[in-house]
Every structure is written in structure tokens, then in C-alpha cells.
Length: 248
Image (cartoon, rainbow, N blue to C red; front, top):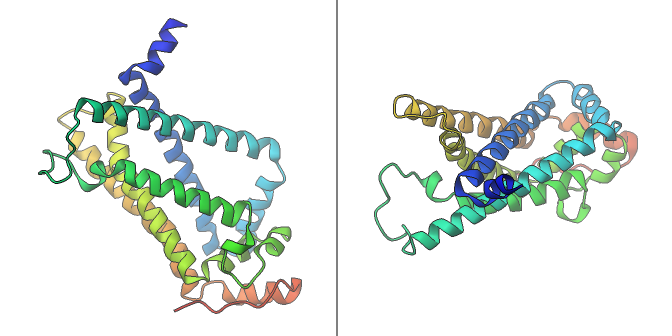
């Protein structure tokens, strides 16, 4: 018990927890992206995928609870380590030359983390809880969700230009966070040295960029007209509402 308590109170233990939880959350980000990219396939693909998840709560809810626990551990470890670092170095870096090797991503990890948190909350309210008042869409996302038509929900939601812009900014914050966080994860786990450490850092930035391009491609495609004909057909069939044209 003392060993476990020491693990949670020591900086090394919390760095390990932050790295491990961050790595698992990264795997979720990749899996979620692969699921979302099915919007470029025929609608029945992503709708069947979403319906399977919704009709198997024994699979869905343990994953959601595990993600919530991982997020809590990650935020707690990051906050406590940051507080201790600031206490040990009361004079911050802002207004002074950046330390050697520091990047914008590394010096704004807390800021990008907070921005990411706000984005995740909005994203959940938008597509999971489906709070109609924040969607900006003229189509009822709740009516489309009742039809298990996630394809139409995504097209309707991203047809609103400011929703798409906020989404792109949100995944930008995510990928800025990942660009440094993945390299730091290998460092905390002891898998990084002076020989191949720079290669891991570059690979982390490339992976973060690819993830950003993957997520951002979805709202951009919708704003360019992807899926609008299908959405019009769905609305005519279920009578959800009129469909807004993609905002310019």
C-alpha cells in the first residue's frame, strides 16, 4: 500500500501515469478518427458502425467510463506536476528567451490542454448528448439520431460554418498537444535517448499533423458539399427540417 501511495505522490510515478494515460487516449483518438473517416464511404457503413455501438451498451459504457478515468488521471497528473514545476521555478518563461529545445507546443501544453477540454465538452454536447440549441443547424440532429443516421447528423452539423471552424480549431489544439505529448510520453517511459530521440520527436509531429488533416478533412468536405444530396433525401423522408446550404 505504501508503494502504491508513493507511486501516486512521486513525480516519477505521476509522469508515468500521465504518459500511460496519454498513450491510451492517443489510441482512442486514432480509433475515433478511423471511425469518423467512414463518412467518405457510403452512408450505410458509418451508420451500421454507430448503430452497433449504440445497441451494445455493455461494450460502449465500459469504454466511456475507462476514457473518463484516463482523462481524469491525465489531467490530475499534468496539473500537479505543473504546479510543482512552477513552485520550483517561480519565474516563468514568458517574456524571456525560450529554453533550448523548447517548442511552442511544449510551452503551451496547459493552454492547449484547456482548449482541448472545452472542445471535447462542446463536441459531446453537440453529437452525443445532442443539445439542439448549440448546433446551429436547421435540421433536427435529435430527429436524425433517432433514425440512427450518424452520416446525416455529421453532414447537418458541419454544414454550419462556425461549427466547422470551431471543430477545426479544436482538433488543431488536440494535435498541437499531441505534437509534444507523444515525444514526452516516450521520454517519461524511458524509451527515448539522445540517439533516436530526435527521430521520435519528428515522428510525433508528423503523426499529429496527419491526425489533424484527417479530422479537418471531414468538415471541409461537408462545407464543400459532400453528403448534401443524401441529407436532403433523409430530411424529405423523415421530415426533420429544411437543410441549410453549406455556408461560404
